[in-house]
Image 1 (cartoon, rainbow, N blue to C red):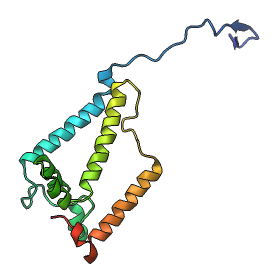
Image 2 (cartoon, rainbow, N blue to C red; image 1 turned 120 degrees about the vertical axis):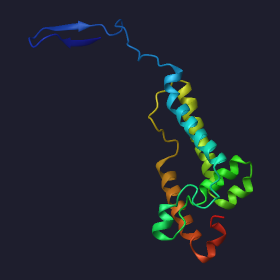
Image 3 (cartoon, one colour; image 1 turned 90 degrees about the vertical axis):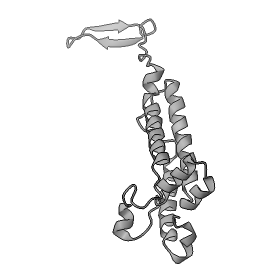
Image 4 (cartoon, one colour; image 1 turned 120 degrees about the horizontal axis):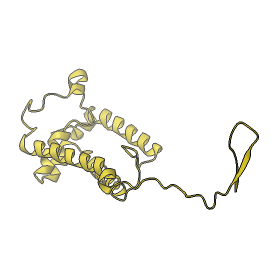
Length: 163
């Protein structure tokens, strides 16, 4: 039981909270909570379809990498479009040769997207872009990407250069 003040006057009324109806949040449709993850999956499928039919191995087919044009270094994503094209053709080894980080990052993305979609389908409220990795893992990933970029641009890391 709670005590509740009715007005600015000294009138106080006793309210029984045990019998008061508890308001539940409105139930959301599965399609509403899973809509953004499904839309994201559809957009990725569309990008993969474009990459399958328009070969990035042809010079200038998708423009130039701005990082490479400005610095002369390969960024961690250089070779990623060619690798995704190779994956859509079923050539996994060629994809690894284009960018060695592509397959692990793609698997990580699929795990993240699958988790996001399943939670959305279950009706759990989620932020628009949920995080499934702790902050420390995100920092470690960022440090590894910087190290990968530096090593692939040294004479010792030429085997990591995009093909």
